[in-house]
Amino acid sequence: MSTTLYDLVTNALDRAGDLDNDIWSRSEMELYICDGYDEFCRRTRILYDQWVIENQHVLGNYQTDLERQLASEKPGWSVTDEPFHITAEHEKNNGIGVQYGGSYAGPAVATSQGAIDIYNATTGNTDVEAFMPGGRLPEDTIDLLRVSYDQRTLKGRSSQQMKTDDPNYENRSGDPQWFIYDKYGLFNVRVVPVATGTASYDTVDGQWGTLRQRLDADSAVVDTIADTGTNNWGILRYRDDVHPMGGRDGTLTRVHPSLSNIVCERYRLGRSLHHFAFELPQSYEKYIEYWALSEALNREGPGQDHDMADHYRERFEIGVARAERRKREMNIERLAAFGGDLPYLNFGLGDPQAPYPYGEPF
Amino acid sequence: MISLADITNRVRTKHEAATSVRWSDAAIHKRINEGLECLAESTYFYERYTTIALMPNRTWYDVRGFTPETVLRITAVWSENRQEWLTPTSQDLLPYDWEQATGEPQEYFTRGIYWLGFWPHPGTSISSNLKVTFAGIPSRFTHPQAVLRDLPDNYVPALEDYALSEMALTDKEYTRSIRLFKSYLAREKAFRDLSTRRLVGAEAGSLMGAL
Image (cartoon, rainbow over all chains, first blue to last red; front, side, top):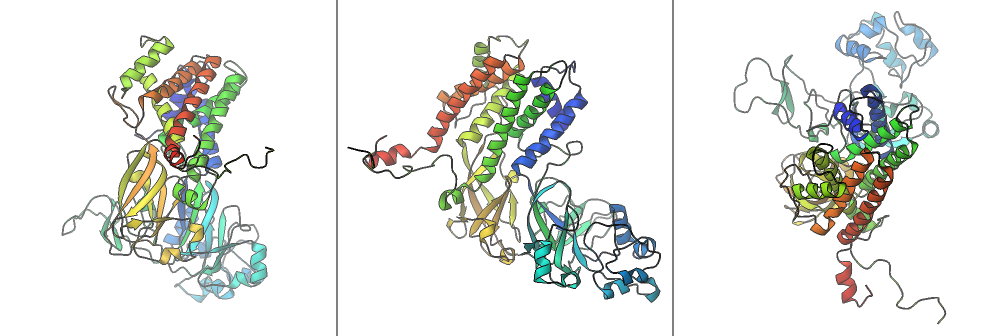
């Protein structure tokens, strides 16, 4: 059974002997628990995940999820009603109703005159295409480990290195070879050259219901009419070639293809305990509770006890050290084969030793 | 083998908490189980294997989906199709386009504490299993008569020390708690030595080494 924030707070209060909230309220303990959860995940980097930047045409620019939805669902909306990225002075003349000035985060969508031109509503061009310069990782990202395009690893470059390698990289488009992660906003990844939006996503038919697998390369929403044939309903459990489906929880909404898509591998924080269950192993619950107790016991006022607080903090540190070691030794066979800082020799005699006290006087 | 009920009674005796007025069985069980998890994580004494059925076009497998226990470390992977061991590796050592290769897995790697990946990954038509041996954390004791055969009786006091230390902490007996926790750590180290140095005696003895 999954552990919830309520469980963790109750456990912490139980350890503190204050289930009646005489000293610490539940809401106060909640803050400490959430803080400890973040601290533990940030320090240990044990939650690995993948995030897909959809390599699909972005119709105009967007700054919020709502704008993105509107831009995707209502082509033309963002072209005429909202600003889009402008990368040169003369490009300002090409938009209709754009707002000048301001600052934007993220790499520019329109990277060439040709791309800008097709935004121009006066051309009557309804077949709008744009490039896919990258995207934003969720802010719970701790470390970006790897970026791949079309199942090939991209090389990370600082923006300065990239400028040296290719002074015109801003205008390049094609299959991405590199990525930049240091210039366009804290969590924005820019691929170079910009991708051309060629990822091929499933068409999802139907409007409501549960997505299920219909064929190997097809997904569909269960509608009100049962399909013919067998095995036509049920929750989709996996889809070939797609990372999140290897997980154990959750229901699909839409699957990301690996081909011609941009996949970012990362370490992240645990999801918010206010909305999701505790993601770490059950054996790590206590460490989060130790953190909360150390914070609670350090607070001025009734119940303050620095010795106990220090002890709980120490126990939290033990937990962090164990989790770090666990991640390091997850692939223990490789460590043993290629050398590593194993705390204990698994088998064998240990370091070679001379059969006499070498170097000491007889 | 000592059952959970017996361990609980021994904890009650040592803590002089014969009745469940102050300490319920559930509260003591919780602390014993936490001790068991700590001990397993530190000593790697709980060893098991599981079988992973390969899926077409899948590189990554979430080990949480294959075992009821928590996996601590992968110790080996055997391919049923190729009839040989997979080579442990790291993604950094693979070529830049490693994800595009398909075929029978030959190497494996891990990411974080949950994800196990294979190279190359299976193509569209494959029917094969991998046998994965691992050290893990056993499932918690739930029933009073539950026993854990992997844990030798003479290391059960480690669980008792852990539970007692936690109980003392809750009772604000700080000094006693520290003493008991140190006692637990000493027993943990002894058990870790037993678990991780199992072959030392045999090898050292056969090579005339000094034990």
